[in-house]
Amino acid sequence: MKNYKIAVIPGDGIGIEVMNEGIKVLNTLGELNKDIGFTFDWYDWGCEYYLTTGKMMDEDGLEKLKKYDAILLGAVGFPGVPDHISLRDLLLKIRQGFNQYINLRPIKLLTDTDCPLKNKGVEDIDMVFVRENTEGEYAGVGGIQREGTEDEVAIQTSVFTRKNTEKVMEYAFKLAKERNKFNKVTSVTKSNALNYSMVFWDRLFKEKAEEHKEIKTESFHVDATSMYMIQRPETFDVVVASNLFGDILTDLGATLQGGLGFAAGANINPEREYPSMFEPVHGSAPEIAGKGLANPIAMIWTVKMMLDFLEHEDLGEKIMDGIVEVLKDRKKLTPDLGGSGTTSQVGELICEVIKK
Ligand code: NAI
Ligand code: MG
Image (cartoon, rainbow, N blue to C red; front, side):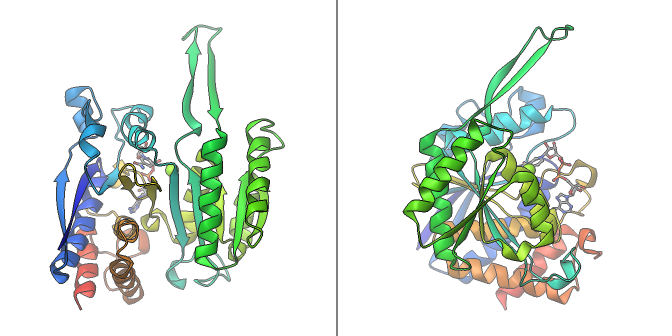
């Protein structure tokens, strides 16, 4: 029997509520399959931890996490702790510390009912974002000088290395081949204004395209991309983007799927030198936290991505079938989807369908 050791960081707000449902699904799969099991170690890192200890995670947090097969994370951030501290001192520390340089975010509409666009449906919205995840605009290079004075200066520098940019693009091209949808990669850029970083990005993308002649390519500026994603989402297959552009466009993508309650994500270290971390795209949604209103589907879909990464695609498929059935039924859904069900009711229903 294969037993997977999973580090669980529920984080803050609805992160905690949706995590419980993700774990329920994994336990259900563990019970159904005698040859696979999961052991969970819970870490209470996050904003509350910060308010009592002054730290978002333990000093030796990365050392502790190193030994796991994967990390599951809910969401971090809560009023009372500045967002740049909660994000940088936990999430980005893990993403960068474990060289999880790929952020994979599928944008797939599951039912026509949840489609926000007129005259579009499930066959039109199915793309995957490959977002650069360890450097770019989020590299954390910069500073503030003469703080609080009239002459205050803020500088934030983007960092794009050839090595990493090439690896991210290579991943995107391989994924397009694997998906075999249109065999196409769209590159998101802004090289008219960002005359160093994005001109460099474009040049490396062209070089990569030369190595993968069987894959079609296109390149759009980020502003045009946001328009095309709404106007003609059916033309997208794999999209490769920098850290900031990918972050912004995937919230737009989440809306195309029916909302943030659907958006799953994975922070991947493809070489498997370090554990990868799986977390939904949404945040801790403080205004609905603790009320059982959060949609757990994004988290459960995220669990599916973890199982895919652990090479249990069959189990991942079971989860997806469960989600789709519960969605089509529309008997129990959370309020963001027009239902009156609670977070845990939806999670339980998905488990029931999986058991069938
Ligand atoms: P958010 O994603 O928490 O919420 C945006 C909107 O979507 C809110 O109206 C919220 O109610 C709704 N929403 C999000 N997830 C939902 C779900 N599963 N079901 C139903 N509705 C859902 O983003 P926001 O408001 O910008 O940030 C709130 C906090 O979360 C901040 O502290 C922020 O820094 C943090 N954050 C953390 C992220 C992470 O841990 N990966 C990502 C984004 C934000
Ligand atoms: Mg985001």
